[in-house]
Image (tube, rainbow, N blue to C red; front, side, top):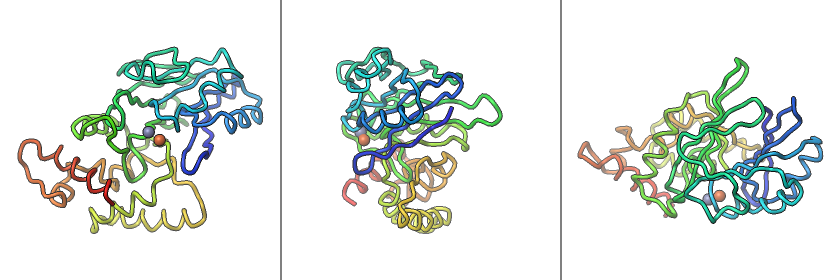
Length: 261
Ligand code: ZN
Ligand code: FE
């Protein structure tokens, strides 16, 4: 499975999955149809699936037009997003599996950013494959999505599930927010050497307009405060100790501070 990253709008990424053996394609969160149609034409591939992570228009905006061109494509999204996803045909729950080409993805129900958000995780099977996580607006490189429809406790639970995946997992998040996320992250953990090094690298990359997505889950675990809410350094920075509920309060404070940053 080849993954093509298509930058659209001001900072969105749409991901086109291509299975060369069958010359079929699937798209994750098509904000727009046109750039996806161009890529499909370039590959000469047929679109067979649309995988949506959540209902926001910068993730589903291209569904209808893509379906018009490829009426047989199947639209997948979370069961809790029923009625909010244009053309949705399959309602997915935690633990469901979906297939594309010779790969299978496990579905995670990860409410927090929205109440219906899901992620797709393609586990590696062959030796030359890596795990691929499509997590929409839940984990960003160096950050996480805003809590529009969910609570800190839900987001802790959701990110907690994704955090258990292997460090080598590639994290395909839907926005290029990395630089501003890391500007905030270094204020939380100024003495985290891995984070400082990453911040320097990302500043250089963004100056040359180089994309910072996909990220690696191992790197996120070491440097992203929103995967580190329960680490002693972060807990202390958020004024939390070891009382019951302090971990969730630490996450809530982090998210609150980032909202105002
Ligand atoms: Zn969103
Ligand atoms: Fe978004």
